[in-house]
Length: 334
Image (cartoon, rainbow, N blue to C red; front, side):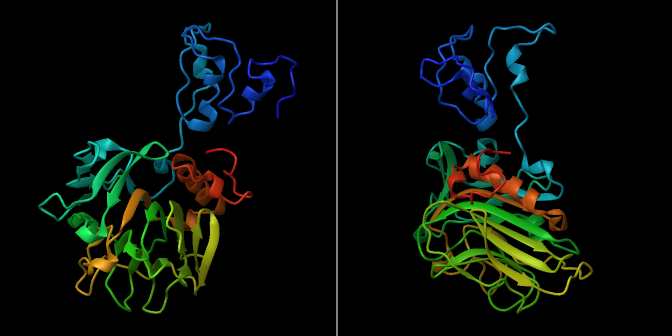
């Protein structure tokens, strides 16, 4: 915490406040060469944006604002990222004009999975700009059976002997709807589940037909962040909603069983039926998806690593106030 300087900004705040990081709305009255208030070069600490050029040139020839710029956290900086669907990255969505019916959505992880809408009409998920926290989301309408289905490569996704982690930010406005699933309806093993059914949230990986995380009653219809950690090395699975632990599942540690790829489809915005395809309409999502990220190295997904990813998602999608106050990124983004 900076000490008080006695130099008061035109807003009435002591000038030291702009050095504390995360304070973005203070006008100091000190103007940069480009006309911006000098406080703007400090806002990068909380927003991840690049500080503007000041016109003050360092001895090395660079603008002094480079001292304040930093490289924003990326999910790819965590080992094992195997899926990254980002609704705010228009370069991965086609077409990406406001309210357009989307034909494809591409994964930003090294796998580069392509998810396509099976519909040949305009009854497809839609790209919505300036939706949540000023960012784009993808909107689904369950009555139109809108969803995405993965390409052949995503069908071959397997845990093998790895652990797993799944993070998602979404809004489900009705009691039931699938968000992200690679499954087969019923009591079978090797299922990745993220769906709501009658206001019960199920986010889990099924090790065996009975090896399932307890379901969590969750009637929330606003935007929320869900985290699933499948730590096979510790024999502990956990789910979190907005950074708060909701359920746990204990089992004998197992890092040797090879969970091979199933032939089931990977779906976004729907849940699989008994043949592995999309389920009847009650399983289609009505709402919005912001971002989905998954990893195949959850044995390394320590509390601090999990919280870093949660912090990134929470601050990006304006859910930081929903984090518990003890969370590492309650006050600032990673």
